[in-house]
Image 1 (cartoon, one colour):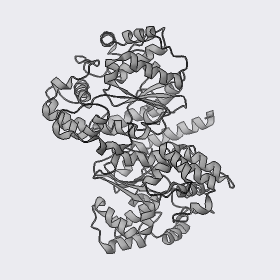
Image 2 (tube, rainbow over the protein chains, first blue to last red):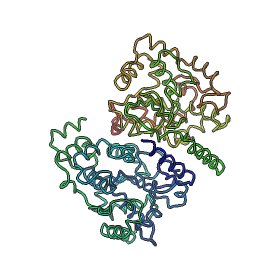
Image 3 (cartoon, each protein chain N blue to C red):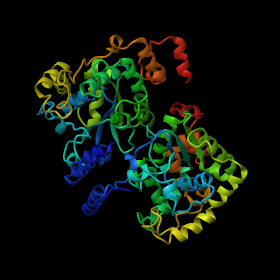
Image 4 (cartoon, one colour):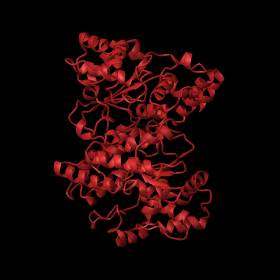
Amino acid sequence: MNLTSRIHSYLKTVASAALGRTPAGRGLTVFPDDIFLVSYFRSGSTWSRFLFGNLIHESEPVTFTNMEKLAPLIYSHPDRVLRGLPRVMKSHECFDPRYQHVIYIVRDPRDVVVSFYFYNLKVRVIPDGYPMEDFVSRFVAANVVGYADRVGCWQDHVLSWIRLREGKPGFRLVRYEDLLSNPARELTRLAPLLGIEPDPKRIERAIRLSSASHMRSLEKKQSQQWVATKDTRQDIPFVREAKSGGWRDKLSPTAVKTIEQAWGATMKELDYQLITDAAAEHELVRH
Amino acid sequence: MSYPQNRWQRMVGALAEAGRVLTGRQIAGRGLTIYPDDVFLVSYPRSGNTWTRFLIGNLIDQTQPVTFSNIESRIPEIYFNPDRFMRKLLRPRILKSHECFQPHYPRVIYIVRDPRDVAISFYHHHIKAGNITDDCPLVKFVPRFIAGEFDPKFGSWRDNVLSWLALRGNDQAFLLVRYEDLKRDLTHELSKIVAFLQRCSFPNIESTAEAFWRASGLSSPERMRALEQKEAASWVLTKRTRKDKPFVRSATAGGWKSQLAPESIAAIEAAFGDLMQRLGYELVSEQSRVPLEAISQTGLPS
């Protein structure tokens, strides 16, 4: 960091601390009955905030403008403000032993990397035309952008939660792909953790108000108001394909191989079919 | 390190934090800047971390013995100094941490200790720190230890240990050291540590029998106790604690056999038994023994 940016960051830190505006993030005060929607980046967590937000709040449909109030992100508000908001919060943290109730959303890393690529174009971390294969290598090495690298690579993130919490009463693992293909079944399974009766009508409403097309039309109207999109490129959408398997058209065989060699064993454990040849597969299982 | 209990404590905490922010003295902690050549000495609290810091510190620098007054600038905790201070330390750095799994720690020496002994040590530690009173019975303390109540950020003993073993247990850049092995065969364990350090950031560290002998003498419980008597008032870990209770306590393994009630032993083994067995800590309460194959799914090194 050079001197100007250091002074800038010092002033920003002092000002936000003095005004009590430092985002909670990792410094969040955690209460025993808090519920967390945890995931790696670009794994459907905004969609899940719509889904669960709409499931919880029956009178007010979730939009991009009220989402930070109805299903807040722990990085959007100071601790003080979060104390007064619904305690169903979204987090991207790697394993945090204080979280007692966790819905962990996992997504095929091959789709995550594609989505993260376009997101980083949108927020101007990478320029147009940046080679996808270079991005994939950086992604696997958790060397993309500071805030993301801090929580580890995809595999560290996923395993940290699964190895520590799978099978525990307050933990539910949900695959993004299952949430897409059968949202009603998944919400019915997860509702009790939120203390909600899985009533089919209520679930149907939540799914309808969180559809990709609905979210896209909301984004068009509200992207200038939502913190996550307002200072970003408006020509690239935040709500992208909202489907699974898109990586098949976007990733080269080399890129796929890079990911599968790094994380193949974990991907298989999570039922993500590998396409890299059997010999390479054997290598990585042994690894 | 437990949560502020009431409004006053919170306010004092907020004022202190504001002061630290204004003067640029925020404690590094999890916000620490990490360099690729850093080595972290990680453990659950009360697992022999400070002893290991003395041992390693005395091996690396053969000229000036480690004391409580210089340890925080040689192998410092990440919880007592601002990042600004930590960034100026001589590199490569060795840093003490109690964090659960941190994906960005490049190299880790993890010290693990029998949780039945950790519980007892923790109990005395919290009396010393004034978090519990003298008359709080050990048997009432144990369930709170199991729940990880006093340091929620570090997790329970199981969370802390398992998080590292499951994620890094098979990694070249991770070394697991049992406190009990250090006690039993110091030379052997020190050679492992030194080989690890030589492989990563410290190619020149000395590994002669003489160096080990010297380091072990300079880090003996007797010497550490004598140093503590002189320096407890100035060392950051002890200065605000009761002076009638020592920081360097029994420094032994297996004290639990005579000091823990059978129900406390059973409670710890019921909560942590699978992981304890995996680490070679033999269980004594019949009901908590689990067949080993039932716990092989945890991704631990065998």
